[in-house]
Image (cartoon, rainbow over all chains, first blue to last red; front, side, top):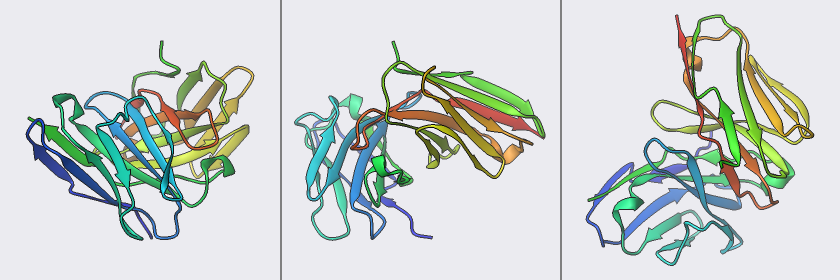
Length: 116
Length: 109
């Protein structure tokens, strides 16, 4: 069964460093999402992406964050200068069509980011 | 105030029991999602509802749009159902989900 994959599964970085989290969505999916979950807290929406541009973003997704689809398969989340509060589990998700059409969103296993 | 509230926060049940998890929301929505988060962290979509009721195996989800309330029921619960169940609502058409804090379910054999 097709699945969303994410790499790395864990990443430890120093405050102020740049990190890139990678996702490979399901191959025929066109809509891509990033979410984060700080330990012990609820999942939060970061950004949605379609047709090579951001469709929607939350207040969390400030200038420190960027997303890119550099080729036909990868979808990346970059954090330019990490802060301690960026420590969280980051989930990528994809869907074949807009969720408004009743499509299911498929989640990746997550990348656990720890900023020291 | 959270826009999506779930109850209970924690639930322990004996194998075989009928389980209900509730979700209330305070905003206008276009759809409501139920998700399951496994102990390892992975998230699986269970249902998307915009009205009425859906059933998949032992899981049933209902929504009452007028009352801004949804329930997730598990019949004949099993220890493998142990997970965090998350309610999330969508306001727009693009997929921006607002999540509840989740209900941690533990089913004892």
